[in-house]
Structures are given as structure tokens and as C-alpha cells.
Amino acid sequence: MNTFESPHVLQIGSLMPVLEKWLRERYVVATLDDAPDPAAFLAEQGARFEGVATSANFGVSAEQIAAMPNLRIISCFGVGVDRIDMEAARARGIAVGYTPDILNDCVADTAFALLLGVARATPEADRYVRAGKWVRSGPNSFHLGRKVSGARLGIVGLGRIGRTIARRALGFEMDIRYHTRHVVVNVPWGYVPSLTDLARWADFLVVITAGGPDTRHLIDAKVLAALGPRGFLINVSRGSVVDEEALVHALAEKKIAGAGLDVFENEPRVPAELLNMDNVVLLPHIASATEETRQSMAQRVIANLDLFFAEGRLISQAP
Ligand code: NAP
Ligand code: 8YV
Image (cartoon, rainbow, N blue to C red; front, side, top):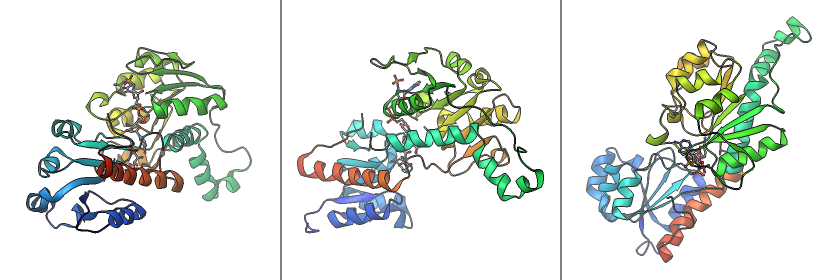
């Protein structure tokens, strides 16, 4: 494509190198992060951008959208669009592309990695071996874990990823129930209208709702108290869904058994108290981060942009 004919696309935040390469092969790309003063850059040059390429981490703010009067499409690397000001995009009729379904498997796998990790204390056991404690303390010296197979799994959010998690749980012969705002038809798992009732019932409560204001602190002190001292919390959705202060308190006071967390309220900052707790497993927001899935996500970001600029439509349009 000749650069004189190519639409101008603004890249917000760093993206996978291959995605950055593909973008530059097709479009005239400017990286907002390269500007010494991003706001001044947008005020001066915003009118030239018809497209934005961003990620679930960086999103696009209402102010940034306002500074691009000719913006027609935002293509997001990720399925969670809570950092994109969807209202501002909708008001201007700007299309928002995202990457649903492609990452269901890896996010569900990570939910199980966290669940197994915290229940069987595998990261802690690994540290025990490396520190020479097994040699010093002898056979069967490491504390007992908790059984996952056959346990009760409560899923908060039974969308694309939640259903994939439920299917994984069938292999572990778990008893599965879920909570959402609307009953999901054609699934064999029991609906629990009250989140606290689900937490009270569950051995493992896995959170996989959307982020944003509607789900902010859905998992609060009350839900954690209901989960109880034998219950584990797993969060692979967004840090904002869990009241982190209440979670730290619940863990410190042994009001819940443990937690497996891929996401945090102020990423990449993790509450200092969690760093010294053995009954938590902490991941740096890597649920979708496999070579295979990230490659497919990058392809979808490009496919959404290409199809939009060619035919005015998207493969995956965020609702
Ligand atoms: P989805 O298909 O839209 O499912 C979202 C689910 O959340 C739906 O079942 C929805 O049901 C439920 N939900 C929304 N608001 C709720 C509320 N207030 N109370 C209870 N349930 C609520 O989305 P998905 O593709 O499964 O992805 C889910 C989220 O996972 C994404 O939005 C993203 O934030 C997160 N994610 C994280 C990673 C990671 O790297 N950790 C990777 C991918 C995705 P109702 O509407 O009926 O309530
Ligand atoms: C993102 C995610 O890809 O899809 C989402 O919503 O949170 C992840 O899969 C990751 O945060 C990179 O932006």
C-alpha cells in the first residue's frame, strides 16, 4: 500500500512487536508514547488519525477521542474494553474492534493454573524445595493442600470465558454453579441469583465478569466473609472487580483460605502485604499470554482494521 493512500493510525501504548510491524506495513502509524508531550501532540496532530490501535491495558480516554475529530475506528488488542471510553466512542459513531473468543482457552487454563496452584500450594512447595527445606525437614514435611477434583466451583460471570472454565471443571468432576445478572440458557450448571449465596456454597470462587463501573468491588468484604476460611478466590477478570483492601484484610485475618490473582486494582502495583503471604499466587496479568493466543489476537487487531478500512465493517465489534 502506498503511504499517500494509507489511513493514519495512532498507536497507544506498546504492542507486540509483530503487531507493531504489521501496522506499519499497512498504515501510517504514529506512536503516542513517542511524543514528549502526548496531549500537545494530539492537540496539534489529532485530526489526521482515522484509526487507533490500542490494547486492553491502555485503552483510549474520552479526551483522546475528542482530540481526534476524524477518528472512525478503534482496534483493541484484548477482549476487555473497560479502559476504552465506549460512551464517547458510541456518541461519535466510532467502531470499536476487539478480540473475543480467541483467548477463551488460555484464560480458562490460567484460571485453573491459579486454582490448582493455590489449592495444592505448588508455588510455595517449589520455593520449599529450592530453599533446601525438603532436605532439611525430610519426607512428608510440607503441609497438606486441598483437593480440587470433585470440589465445588462457583463461577462469577458465565460468558465466553466463564463457560470455558466450566467445561475445564467438568474434567475435574467439580460441582459447578454460577452467578450472573441474567440466567444463561442451555447450560447444565445451576444459577445462583445471590452472589453471597454462591460464595457461601463454593470451595473455589472464580471471577470472570467484565470490568468497569458495573462490576466495581462486586467481590467485597461481605462476599469474602461468605466464602469463608475454607474458600479460595480466583480472579482472572479485572482488579477493579475485587475490593483489594477487603481481600488483603480477609487473607491476613484468615477469613478466606487463599487467593489466586492474575489482575490487580493498580497494576502493575500489587499490595505489599500480598507479597509475603504463602497462601496467594500472584501473576502479572498473563492469562492470555501464550505465543499462540497473542499471535491470533494480533491478527484480529489487524483484520478488524483492514476490514473496516476496506468495507466499513469489523470481524469483532465490541457491543
Ligand atoms: P463476556 O462473554 O462478555 O462475559 C462477561 C460475563 O460477565 C457475562 O456472563 C455477564 O453476564 C457477566 N457479568 C457482567 N456484569 C456482571 C455483574 N454485575 N454481575 C455478575 N456478572 C456480570 O466476556 P468474556 O469474553 O468472558 O471476558 C470476561 C472478562 O474477562 C473481560 O471483560 C476481561 O475484563 C477479562 N479478561 C481478562 C483477561 C486476563 O488477561 N486476565 C483476559 C481476557 C479477558 P450478565 O451480563 O448476565 O451479568
Ligand atoms: C490483554 C486482557 O490482552 O483481553 C483482555 O481483556 O486483559 C488481556 O488478554 C492484555 O491485557 C494485553 O492488553
